[in-house]
Length: 134
Length: 179
Image 1: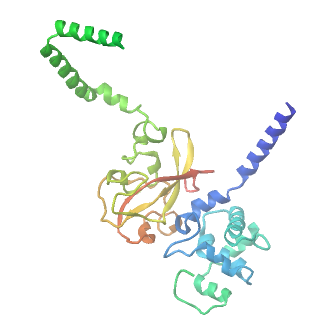
Image 2 (image 1 turned 90 degrees about the horizontal axis):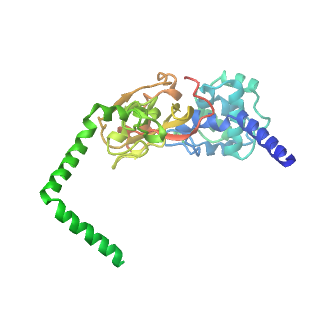
Image 3 (image 1 turned 135 degrees about the horizontal axis):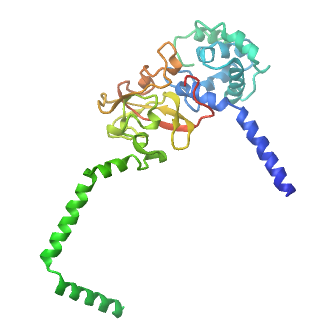
């Protein structure tokens, strides 16, 4: 009987933790249509795996929220912050440092980038190119 | 074994003695014709509403060849299920676009919202059959992330739009915010 209660307790906790996390749901509904389920993108859409190239570079953490996708996503600041923490960890292999807060996201998305590709090349330190995909 | 043989022999001889061949043929023909006429009766057509279709949904909302099919809640285009494909597969000679419009629809059978991916089939001229335009939860082009008026064949090898599928990705945690 005791074991049953313990098990039930664990199941309940597990359920409530899962119910709180919307990152994968938000990724599928708001990103995967263009970036695809595996993040590989297409001819016109950049691959999210290319985010690795910018890991640790100054300005990368801010850049990732100011690009058109996240900056215009129909998500609250809190949900977008959670999604970005999840997404950066998934595609770069390490969590953003420091983690995004809703306030960060609110401030960053208020300044969307006019020319994301030029900004990316600046951060990466490579000469500008005209191709859409990195 | 011999008992079964004897039983069959007895039955056959008995029916040959009692029933004429023409009598049997006329009866059998009657049954065939009557069976064909049955669905024309209003009773049979009324029963259609209650037959369980795709995904356990009753009536038109369970028929992938109809605009009313539950997964088609935000569809804008021709149904691949009327064009030689199905609601999950492209017709021969077309390619499924990797980029796609994504939204949620509620399945009336279990009352849950599902994430639906409307992958377009591309590479042949437009199909022209079963045009549907429900657009529930769709937004104008300036909300590009939730607009289905973009040519989503942009990610495929050939950009000619042929028809649309409606794939279930998984159960949604909530309905999309535009609903």
